Image (tube, rainbow, N blue to C red; front, side):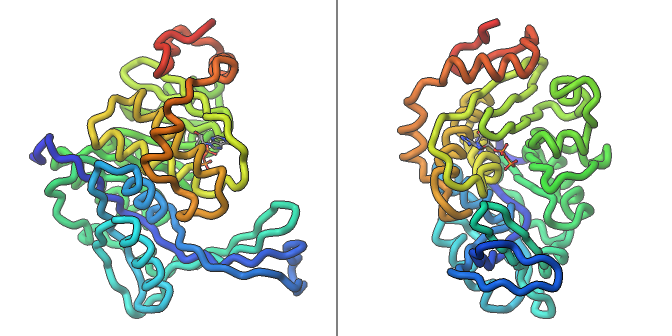
Length: 328
Ligand code: ADP
């Protein structure tokens, strides 16, 4: 069994280099538009979450990822290492590193084409030894069979398994049975548990002991041990919501690995992801622990908490991290 004093986080998942062009409008099929500034940004849900966990501090963070042998791989490795993430790389020279081509319009719309490349080659036996790891954090941008195998191996060794079930898809029961924590947005929850009876009914249908549903600017709700924890979002000026969900997952997992109780971990994840939406970009927008600690000193907004409680039908199980009982 893994030593329970371990505090490390291992993220196993995707890394993509994003190629972003801003343009007046997104081209329609067959059309060419002249764009303006072009930039490249390290991304991919796995890599973003690893950066978020590392910047949260206190939990040593490692990442298992699959890369090609090209310039894009170098850029992704540099970004992760600079954030303090130790790497386990499956190198696939015959494949290209994962890339995303993103056109951003002046109206704030985007069109994205992803070529997953080497991410598709991540294998069950690529999982490194789990010494020092208390939590394994997974997403769904690598093959489902690999995700399920990694979850099963970690679970068998007493490592806590956290899955961010994004992008949305239905999940097989055996995978759900290996999870300790599931993090989803509303669309992802619907893909797993349907929409009948509303949000809390869907939440109650998921056979995982701790389930967290993120609700964008409204915050999040979590069900654990028969209780429902509500965490309103921190009010911030919104610039770019890219990587908000990834920041939330990485920081939540790092906080749990450090030994924080779920309500405190939810609040820390909400503060970090709020800061992420105030800055443009993916990994570049993920905050460091000091900024998060400063925002955590801001009390939760009572009106936002009441609105979240109303959205949950004032279920009698509702609690909040800062005030335990939630106003009716
Ligand atoms: P995803 O991008 O995966 O759909 P969400 O949009 O639900 O994830 O955002 C994840 C978390 O990020 C939310 O639970 C919230 O804490 C934070 N967040 C998202 N949007 C905002 C916002 N506009 N203001 C403050 N926090 C936000």
